[in-house]
Image (cartoon, rainbow over all chains, first blue to last red; front, side):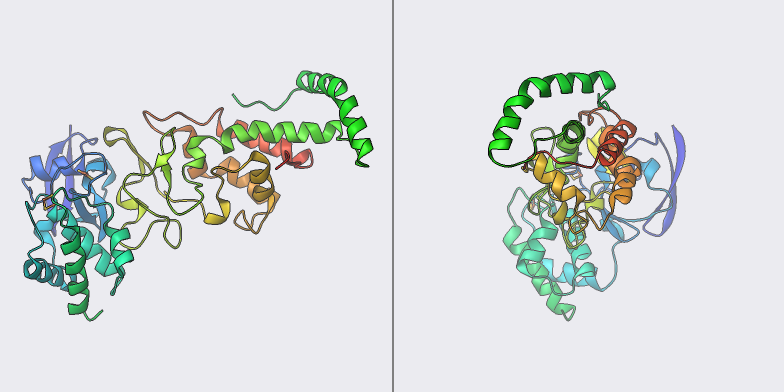
Length: 154
Length: 198
Ligand code: FES
Ligand code: FES
């Protein structure tokens, strides 16, 4: 065990964890930031996606010892025009079904819109291919990303 | 283990060549070609030894033909569905670094390296013959613009190449060591860098 300090959603948070602990466990179990979900634990499903220094990262495959000074943003801490556009589009399209995968989907959608202002269907499929949805909301997700892109002027 | 063929090995190679070589010479003479020399045979033998690394799944998985990498020793298509993107680091929004971080993480069974990425499409090896890979690996137009010295440095020193010998729990390592691989490739280069038939 060691004291690890993580920069999460703009604040420093210290916790006692083994360095080999997945960031996902640190977020959920130690810091009670449960918006980020556990799906597979092996980087297959995307449910645990957060940002580190603005880049999408599967928090289940990142041990806290490798986070360093990276600024972590979870679904609880997202902000900015892409986040607002995605939130609006998700509500308008009523995207979630059970909702379990959706925080990961939203994080990946924001990452995509930061990378490409006007993604094509194929661009969306390639970027979102790492986020699984058991309820198969894929068609609504794609439509909502197009809506969000339009709202952002893409 | 990879080995640079020793003098004893080469004596054996010569012995075998003397047994099989006579008929090969006769055939070659009949077609007006010069018979393969011991030196050429040794060079080809060295590349075949290097081929045990080049054609190992640890290498081929990220030297795919097509856009999608493969995984594990069966070389199944990569899960999640990912593609190389413009620079081999994944498409916008889903970079390799989303899942593959700075080092292997055995708890999640995810391999890692600071510059995890696919080899360029020009360096696709999967499914190709060793002879085809040999011609390709020598060709600066298809090997990232490397002359032989740069190629030898790359295979001997590049840490992403070196990952193949420390791939993390649950993955078979490429045979030998990176240093041995580098030595075999160097010996091959010094022997004239001859290729097996394509
Ligand atoms: S829980 Fe991390 S990718 Fe599935
Ligand atoms: S909405 Fe149910 S798993 Fe995606």
